[in-house]
Image 1 (cartoon, rainbow, N blue to C red):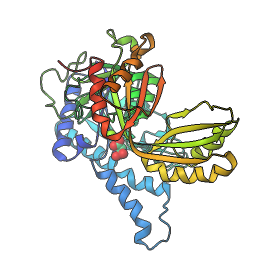
Image 2: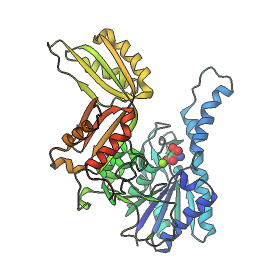
Image 3: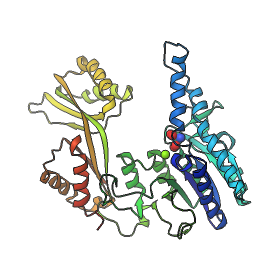
Image 4: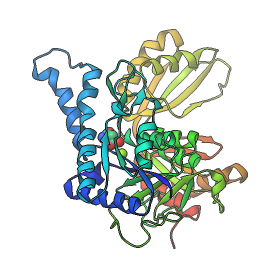
Length: 424
Ligand code: ASP
Ligand code: MG
């Protein structure tokens, strides 16, 4: 007997038939004797619709400002999960499984006060644990909690992954199964490289890099949380027949386990290749080379909530002027240029140039810590294909390379193959 948290994303609960299918997955685990809590997203597309309504409301009233109250945004947008939790509880009851729905505030899942992008601070799992021990399934709304002002708060888009991991940590679950529309984590995006392989296991650190650097399987914060609390997290498909052979295998179910690196016996040097589109490069020419310049540039960018990623600064030839290049999301270029032009006078630089539509390709693997030459292999492979490198950043377990947009897929396939990740 184990304790399992099962999370189902929007496509897995998109209509009544799929919710029935989800109920059958849950019943399988209950029938096997496990204690089960379920975390659900809203039906796919629902949250977007709700967000659209909130954004349209002020204008529909002829208001001159498009601004709206974040507390009311949360009140509206959290309703999608309320619907699916109730429907799944009904579905479970209809097939003979004892179940009860739980809104974030009923547990409660306590968050901070950052309405619209709240963080979970505490979960009191005692009541649902008691009921799980008696065989009742708790169906918990993802994406929401209760803020200190006693109002519903949502966790930011994609937040139900984080809810699931947090609930699993609070309940000390043996595993958190994230059911989604793909059957695991792949060495790279299979739509770009059909020879991508599904990984049986990946370490928390690597998954964190994969998610941060473009892989869309899990919300980044959920991986952070899983790493901190050591929640064994399992990515698997909800679309398979719930009763197909092996689906209920506790030791070795189909999917990808995200776990401590100690659990991974045969560590490859490189585990995966991620990519992120829509990067933009901004270059400042002939910036004064003196203390305080970077603070003078990146401080105002941070205040404007612009996420700066790769930063490259050249050594100045004569000790007085240098070039600084960095990347931001393409959507933030205009805002960044406005901020920089404002800072121009106090910081001092000659010109600013920008280029959008670039791609960051990243090579990820904890094996890099103990292997030399991983970066050199990437550079040579890209050079052989005539792909120009614009910027490079590295950490202990990853190399990120900025290239021109049209080369994205070629670069991903080239790197996937040069590190021996292709399926044979
Ligand atoms: N329904 C929310 C969203 O679409 C949360 C989630 O699905 O993870 O962002
Ligand atoms: Mg999701």
